[in-house]
Image (tube, rainbow, N blue to C red):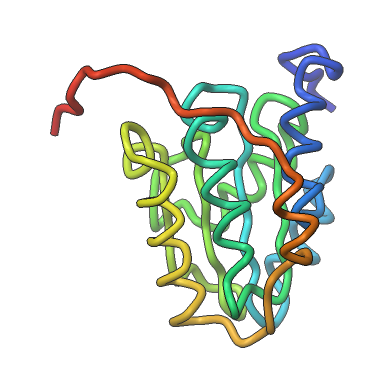
Length: 170
């Protein structure tokens, strides 16, 4: 087993932000196989400590999970922490996108139906990423949402996105 890249207490707030909205963490490669290889829809976040994860991705995921339909299973792996689980997840979507973090992938019956690698996330507003996720959920999911009650969601706090005015290139 590979040791984590970061102190566990440093990443715990980032984990907590996602488990608070109903995401279940996958900590082993075997857990990834059981979840991703099954039937139904599975949304998986490759969580990360980077700024675009905190300022854009985690708030967008939390908001998208308030949609009227959501995936059957909502899970995450944490890049740099549970390395074998992260690598196993990446093996399931290697044809759709190169490994990156953060990243998001929606599987249906074990096949990638929507992929959001880091390159499609950085420099975007959380609302734009949320809209893309909602579009994917609406197209492929049937489970009634939201993942948590709206009253509970309203009490959550999220990181703010970076105030940089540097335009995105490409």
